[in-house]
Image 1 (cartoon, rainbow, N blue to C red):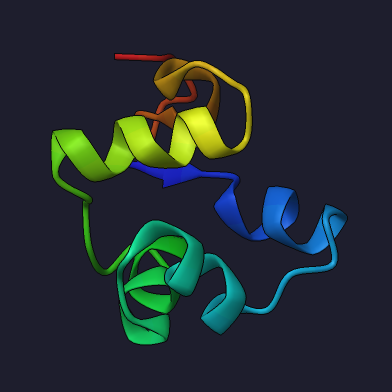
Image 2: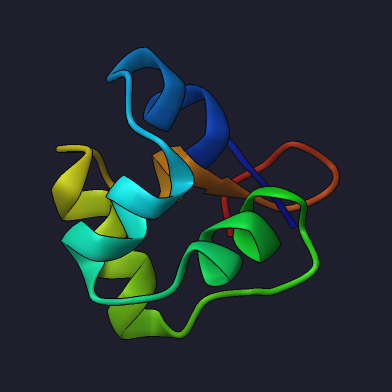
Length: 68
């Protein structure tokens, strides 16, 4: 699973800690999502999408590049 959380976060000038605080998770959780070591729960994926004003499928894609 690929995502563009890092790019979206950086575009807003946020640190991993800032984004984690806004979503109620740790900086380490944001780092793990960005590096692909952790797939967020559905509620967290939806929170990320809402935060970035995008659809979940716009942020997360399968490794073949297609939304799932």
